[in-house]
Length: 278
Image (tube, rainbow, N blue to C red; front, side, top):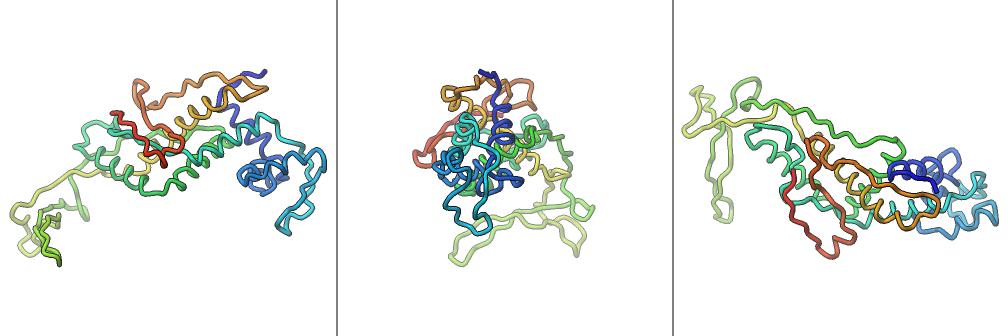
């Protein structure tokens, strides 16, 4: 048996084996082992050796598409099935997750931007999140590199607008239903050239860190997927032996801490995990 880690196994499967049947187009061809697996058409793969061609092709562009690459290795098929199954997993972002925990003295801005990023990510459907996990795993396997988690701390400054100090003030408004609530509005009197009564200034990042947060979110989703696949595939492989990965969930911190995890069928079970993580 060949000893490999999960990243090496994935690269072998998606670069060398699962493109088989797809000709020069590789994975993207609908007749590649990977696309056929996704379409739950594994009966077609078993016919490779017997027929040497793909029968019952549905699209004219691929009629009589002859297979010249042989069958994918059985372990690669097992890997492909496990990766495809990631689409049914739910991404669990624990309470207290802070992808910018190594950014110091941000006056609460880091937590605010992280919360907004998680809210946007959570607004995606479970299907979109699941498909995103699969794409992330396949893409990194093909490229042979990890998602970019490097994020230099953005400079914190007092808010400006047009190069001038920005002022804010809370204003009480009443909606059409008579409900009163407070909103933050511009707090500078342009006519008098001075801040309005009760106006205040607040801090902001000089550059938007949303991309950095999503990069670290992707990185932790990827590591969580690797760990899930490692546990899933270990007992099933016939020609490969998996060694445990030592990838840190938080390489931007001095120690490895808990982070995002995957739960199979969590969308249906409403699985929760409350962990304070950074």
